[in-house]
Length: 335
Image 1 (cartoon, rainbow, N blue to C red):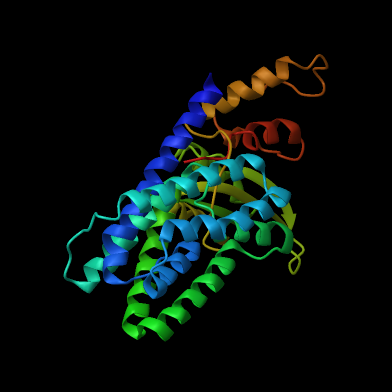
Image 2: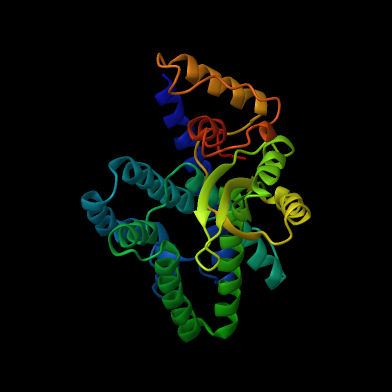
């Protein structure tokens, strides 16, 4: 029952997303002779030059891509993507008479990009695509380690080149603006406002407990402590690994700098964080440690520890099992 509900939700999301993309195509792009990216852009070029039906070209061009995908990609992804492609073709067909009146070229580029971006983002959130170069990009990424963005960029560069040749530089620039807006909006819809950041904080033996303590208690974020050795100094170091929300980044920087001004911190964008981690508290971590300790018949292997504060654990290497159960299993965040 739960699986059926999930499938229905995904199909609804794909339907809504493809309807917005169809609306962007006929309501904004086609009346102003602008192009979208991918196979849709190729179909629109053929429509403008030879008056060939966009939906028909979309379906025909996708057939070999889906056949290729059968051998290389998951069937579930292909099935939902096939539905997405057919729904996009359907919405492009039924919205042909719908036009959004606009006189400003800037408005055309922005509105067209927003509608396309929101539509694509919703479809991506359903773990599907609208077919086209997304299938080709996934295959290239999976088997040739070529990023999906690079494949999309190459295809769209060809489309822009054709636009310059046949329709002029002005149309090409507006098309590029529309693609840029669509890309930004898609990323926003997929990642949301609460984007994740991965932090590696390298500090010394004197400060690592204080920093991890503040991250655990003040921010309620899980921390993994990794013992290390500095290659140049040959001194013991500690790497604190954690995932936070982008809005918490300034606070974490303040915590680290105020505690250890010599700490080395790297921050990188996390495209996705999977796993439990919301609502972490010290109490929940201690409860996990104790519940795990009760499951062991050999009390010498791991003993229950109920610290009032993480600072009470003075020797991490001597009580390694307890500490790593306490900290490493403290559910690195999904914000």
